[in-house]
Image (cartoon, rainbow, N blue to C red; front, side, top):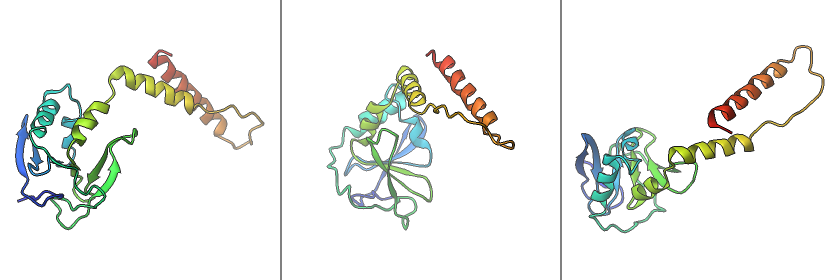
Length: 167
């Protein structure tokens, strides 16, 4: 039996669209086995919306988020605290052993609300490319220098990216 890493109460196994997740009814947290969180990231998909609605039934407090917790599966392994995405908005607990992810109360809904749609992703991609566009450095290359050929390949790749994103 798996226990909640925050309250140490039993986790309840719930199948959402044939994908098992483990819910803590005591604190409204949820544990995802390795790589299953990807099925619940998008609120527009039925699984994500169903799980978020199910978790709203429980009124959990955000208990001791500064405390490190052990993995419900690998009970002797302390989970790592890290940000889920580059936006640094949702901090999750991830087991370095089994790859399981623990989300505290409200974190799934927050993660879903921050998910970018395709148009927003394309805009962000174009901004990142423009920000990190290589600067022009001129000079005579060394006789054995392959950087000149590499620079041309990178420039061609960036030009292709701009063409594909429509900029």
